[in-house]
Image (cartoon, rainbow, N blue to C red; front, side, top):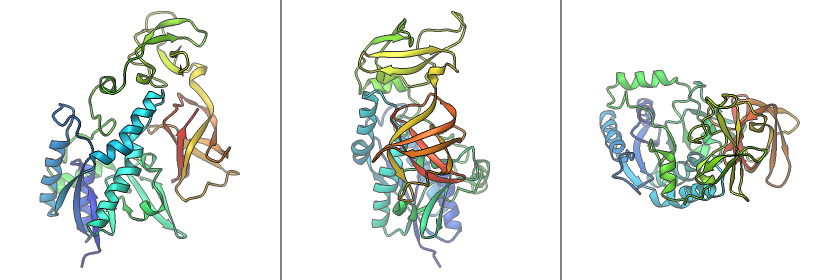
Length: 359
């Protein structure tokens, strides 16, 4: 007897394919759903959505489940891409994948799945959900190197109550093994990287199609002009590549990094050396806080947080400083804290939520 209907978001990749397979094996009625979120340049060498759909359909056929394709390109443009451009224009560095999860994969997709009669949705994210004392918690995956709770920290109680992450306790190597054992055609397919709609294309070239260049000076904190930039939108804190001011053989021999933006004067602040004090911050201010439980944590306790995805948890204290602002004070100064990125808080394996870094 079926355990109920689960709609699986199938991207054509190995993670979502194995997710669908495992749920079918566990006795669920599984329906695959392929989401098309971007269609501005389908014919581009960088846009893989056509091949991804072919791969998802082939896997669904092998597993023996129905699959349908749904187009969320309009919702994506309205809810995610417009925000992405606004943030870059303001000189910040947004993380659209986080917004895509809360607005598309766990909102538009969830709504569609419920209309199809699903009780739950599932994705190939590496994370876990558990219910404790009537509240749903988002937990880190067992495979720490693949944990994706950082990208899911804006999910709310309703979204988590309807979500399943079957890969949460499986290492990535085992996922590929399962795919091979069951002859899934994408068992060896390379993982997609980069921002969801940009794929592998050169980022600056992509951004330049939507935002104008606005050249200005590249200066040291003391005001010495080191070169020129093409527009503050095209650079991010901690960036080393593409500055065009060398450093390897000049001066101290240390490379140059972006350490700040002077928006008022259109100047890019650059410093020499990875550990320059201008790149290290002991605290940050975050806005638009979202707490998964619905309430802020006990600020008398110590927690951990990360200011970017590929980062070790850093010990910190959390202080609520206003109606919507929160200060994170770290035990050790953090490198290249970037406005527009997300700071995400943890209590051990439990993801508490997070907010947008303001400064």
